[in-house]
Image (cartoon, rainbow, N blue to C red; front, side, top):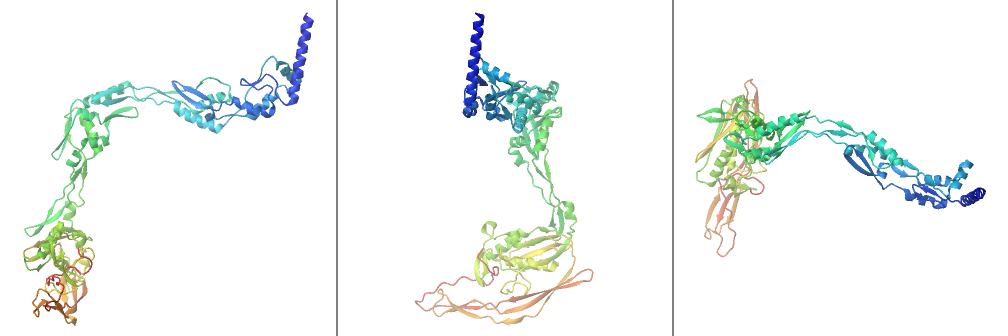
Length: 586
């Protein structure tokens, strides 16, 4: 009986070997070959790589843990890659080993046992390193510093808690076996404990400070403004900061500024520059004044200091002191001690142009120029408008007399020009009238037109220059105050190149037929040179000649047209005008 069993076994072995050899010759795997539990026995070599793809784990998730932190990640993200061709070759080698005993053994086992083949996996080192760094950050935990949380005037403690740190090298070392298939289940990574820098005693101390801070309102005052901060409001801006293990009670600057609201504007004061005013005929310094601006950071620090202190819960609001551009000491150094020059022109009272002259005088009064600074009338006053207090007055536009808002201000310009002229100050920009008007000094006058025709005076003296103005119903005066630094004379030459006044006639429908009247007296044109002579204390003499050409002013005679003829009504002229010289109406 035993011999029969042995004979059957030998026969079965022989059959299995013969079958295995047949499959081998046919280019297929042996029966019983498995890759990660997937049966690939008897699969032709040409189809084997595709069959092996069934064991690809690239999209499987791997769980990585450290302390009580857990992160899941796909194998592909940590560098896993199945080498299908290498795995297929390994499966084909079963039963084809160079060692005949091993090959025969595989053939014998193929029909009654499995022939396991481990999948061949490669690891992308760059992907593994990047994943390890990322996972190390995700798995690490910062320690919890002690803290306080404020809500509606109440305080909640946050106790310190330890954290832990995970090193990327530890993660990479733990991941590699799992990626290569040598480990199953979650991957556990070792951690390093990180103690918090604060202790429960630190929380005790800052909690005590918070209790004092919220025990009663805080009041801050400035310039008659009172800012009362309730405990509930204070709690809304307080928080705890940690620095090197020290816990401090602080307030957010932006939140404090928002909490202050209208107080920010109410306490604000612009600084006031020092200046000079003429009182009882003498220049006197009006001192400068510092300003004040709400400083959110300073207010935040002060709120905490007052609220947590042991003293009174009120204080003077701290903030930013705004210094003036020109201090009293700086004005004193300008040496404005006397009237250097003054000039007056007169006018007929009651005319609209008088209001314009007086208004521009008001706007220029009190201008203070340091050495080297200049004043342009257009630049300083701007466009003359009714909103600024100007009205209609006579002017010249393209050689014609018109009525325009601000008309007449050139009389002030001429007055200003002459005051600067006799003060010895530079006049780098000016333009005389195109016609000569007898109320102005011949060859020594100026017109202005916004914005094209400017009159500019520069303080070229070593001292300060204060401009003052005054007016009456019949005159306007401009005075220059400083320290006399040069003697000034003016020399006028003879009138030359005299051009007679042309005669013009124009109809006036308001006149009876045949009647006539002189609408404008003519005046000859001429050229004149006026020289300013400057004598300096060191004996130097400078001469500044200015040549002016005045156009002839036509003599206009109006006549009554014949009955039945139609003529346009002539534009109103004002022989006492003289401001605009060119450009559009203001």
